[in-house]
Image 1: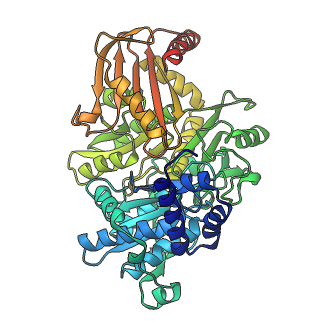
Image 2 (image 1 turned 30 degrees about the vertical axis):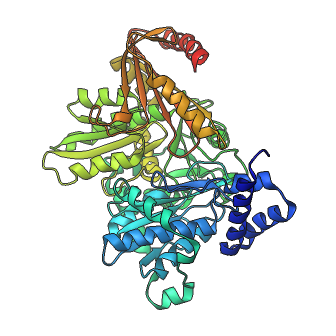
Image 3 (image 1 turned 120 degrees about the vertical axis):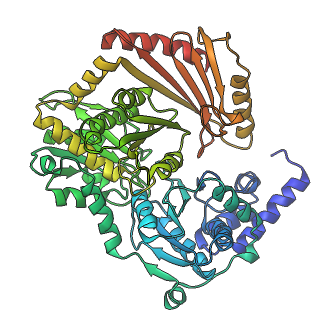
Length: 569
């Protein structure tokens, strides 16, 4: 590897120091073996950078090194987090949960003990629990903050560390920036330690009482508009937790409601290796393959899948009464169906104006449905924490109430008393919706077609390209600069640009600064370009809308345009 002697020396010094600091035998041995073998390229990849505390936390590949997530990095971040908490509250407390990923339980305990060593009270779940339950718990317990150990839908090689503030939402400015600054100051000799027994004896570490989770379940049931329809329904559900934390809460709620369901046995067990899928993401059709096969066997009325931390929900529906074939819905179709249902059955029961919050990359059909029925739809930056901010604004409003929040990346929320996307309550909501339409002898896909007939046909296509390694960030910067240089009147994908919005400057259409460029075209199409907030890749969202076309004509138009887009992307 072509690097200077000075760089080589610095990398070896960092590796040597890490071995002294890392208490976990597995991670320690990885780096020690690389040093013994003189595997400098491997060492460089592990130490050329350090995982940063970014959008609400950190996420990375499991392994030894500062550019990996491991016990040392978890303790370092937590020490910085503890310092920040003490600067902003007199008696801080933190709720902690973790999912089924490898090392999640260990990292959760290390997080708890580091906080306890800093005289911060911790309430820790004693088994895996999903993101929405943690968000609810923070609010329910009036904790200062919360932490979830998860890498959400990423491949099994990853894990992560997500931080929540007292409102139950992921941290936003100034807290995220402040925590990051504290973390940057931490050296290994600053990290405090305490053992588990001592933390318990001092009353600093306690385990989450079951009544907290029961309160969450009660809130899900209370949110239903047609609970009696659901309880009296004969519908059948096929469900997969994808080896994740959605299993227990969703089956508990189904049992409580008397809903008939089957679970993919191969994906029932908690397993951080996710052996049955390449990526445990319900957005991926391959991840949903086994549950769709199960649905065909049992003629299920709805197919559901959740990711490891149960904040994303996938849905498939039978295409006809024979239930021999099923259609996987994309994230926007799920959002459209759920918001249409809520606007029809729940919004009329409240005298206040319903408010729906969606990300800027979620279908504008959501906005059309809400505003045509006198609701308010708010566009926010990508990231559910921005939806949480809008929820906080109207929490005590005399004229408005929160109805629904959605992201095209399979994230939904219809509960008012938590602040992150929730696949558990959304799964119950989707089941209620299917039961409601079934009672009306209406297939849910038929309802989707009715919506298209009323509002025109909408669809979107999403592409992403990865840029790994040290040069990845530079390449992504060059690509974003290219789009920022485009002007009205320029052409892209053989269409004239009529409007360019660059959010990096901030305060455009009420949106804060963000690394996002939006191009609007003469034919009504829209292209949104943004780097991922959690992975080294750029996402491209292309939006299509047309009226007066049949399904086949619209699909043909979209395919023709996609060819032209791909030639330039």
